[in-house]
Amino acid sequence: MNSKKSWIKRMVYFVLLILAVTLLYVIGCLIHGTITDFKPKNIIDLQAEMKHQNSILRDSHVTIVNWNLGYGGLGATSNFFYDAGGFLTSGGKMVRAPKEEVEKNLEGIYYTVAANPADFYLFQETDTDSKRNYYSNMYSELQSKLNGYASTFAINYKAPRVPLPVLEPWNVMGKMESGLATFSKYELHSPKRLQLPGEYDWPTRIFQLDRCLAIHRIKTENGKELYLVNLHNSAYDDGSMKAQQMQFLKDLILAEYEKGNYVIVGGDWNQCPPYFRPEVIPPGNGNPTAQPEIAADFMPSDWTWAYDPLVPTNRKLENIYNQVGTPTTIIDFYLVSPNVQVLKVKGLDTKFAYSDHQPVYLEARLR
Image (cartoon, rainbow, N blue to C red):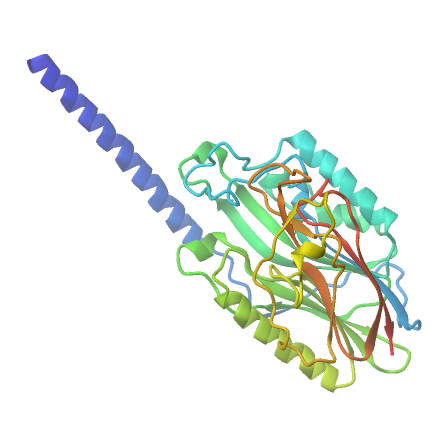
């Protein structure tokens, strides 16, 4: 009888010890995350790295490719624990893809970029020093591939250690350094990183992205400027942060248009464009699904939302990609001012081979 009581007592002590160690670990993560939390200024001047680019845009015809690269870790054979509802544990989903898969995705990304030449490229989720893609510097690699382009990098995710999933300290996301990369055949004037409004409550915010805009001015022959914006709105929120960010963007670009400038905004909006109808997307593109969409009257009626209604640009990551069942949607697109005429917009169908997003190509004329 005494031995049974002793065994129960030891088990209770053991359980309490495990709980205490777990609690101390979680508290330590929160303290470390709070101390090291990246808190960028509202406005940061970006360094425009110049490489034999033209000083003035003399052609009224411009082309752009916009693509969330998914940091090279979210190809068609990947799933992701956080999209599947994981927080405490990974639940058998990937925290990061195997290294060979990441390398294959990165090669595919660089090939796709090279195969689709454009005057400008707007990239999101471009990692420079992150554990999740085995510390590949995508910005540096893209610079070498796009020789002759000016470029900027606006960081929006910086953390020495993201401790998710919480109860798998041996399998956490780890170090994070990622951002918006913009490439231009023309000289970039006064590029800036603008912090977007809105943030999560503590402690969630210390491990989330610091959402921003990367803005660039390109001088044109007629004295006006092309105001080019690279954007990545909030995800995993109830819509309130996106609403603040959208109002911030609206005020910004309307002011630029009032000055007489051309405005083109491209990026990952994390919401559907006005009038998006998933049933239009042909079979074989997953299971097209609507998400909250931007109100049709959000911008004046003479502004244009440019997207390809036939090609989804984003897929869900609960499971690996399935061309029949995986939920897909359109959240990557452009917004252009009335003095910009959209000539062509085309989703580049990669079957989500290298990223959970697909690139979108735009041809436009500055009027």
